[in-house]
Image (cartoon, rainbow, N blue to C red):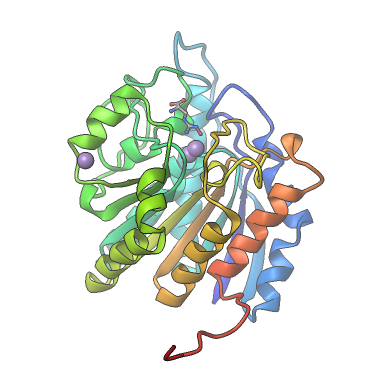
Length: 303
Ligand code: DIR
Ligand code: MN
Ligand code: MN
Ligand code: MN
């Protein structure tokens, strides 16, 4: 595959800072070489910058104009990269997905293919600027791309992403307003209990089967806090009880086997909070699994 690395040192999606160091942490942890070692063509396009903007204080929303400006430039970068290969967005906080998913939606429309989104996250990120309690826009990208109201000043999304085409896996911190909206929605929402009870492979495979049946494009958005904080401490919004290293790898290995993933976000890594590169290294290893790293090919054993 032609992997296009796009640095998105975006830090405007929440109050606490440090995600702007993410792209360089991924480079330092060896993401480009890890993908080359798997036989992929890799081009690191450097970092994207936000479109020009003027910051104005907002009574509730954190860095609204900066986030709009990043959404504009990242949507353009995503749309362009989709013509050439598989973009990997090295965040940056999760507000970068307002732009990456928008750009991928534009591409999917031109290609006349349905788009599906897999959201691996402790949080549902289904707020609107109005329902958000925190004012942190990293909690809103799924609200935006599915066409919820209240995103004044953001680029027009055109036809929204159908709720049926979204699956969130790893949930364990959902605000009341999001919960009510999600319950009423057609979004597939898999919480940690469901993972405990059924294993992570079953709900994931069911979703991948739907993507394949529809000949869809698949955007994957991996939030560091999908993982348990014991193994991935470098994130501002840790929630205990997250995915294990093996659950993370299994998801990524299944994504690779499916051949369906067409774009990937790596978000919310805050290297300022990391323990000697532990989280950055795990995220690189997970990305490598999604792009074909494995211990063995699957043996077809009849036990
Ligand atoms: C919380 C936390 N739901 C909020 N959200 C996220 O601020 O809206 N944390 N995405 O990672
Ligand atoms: Mn998130
Ligand atoms: Mn999260
Ligand atoms: Mn429901």
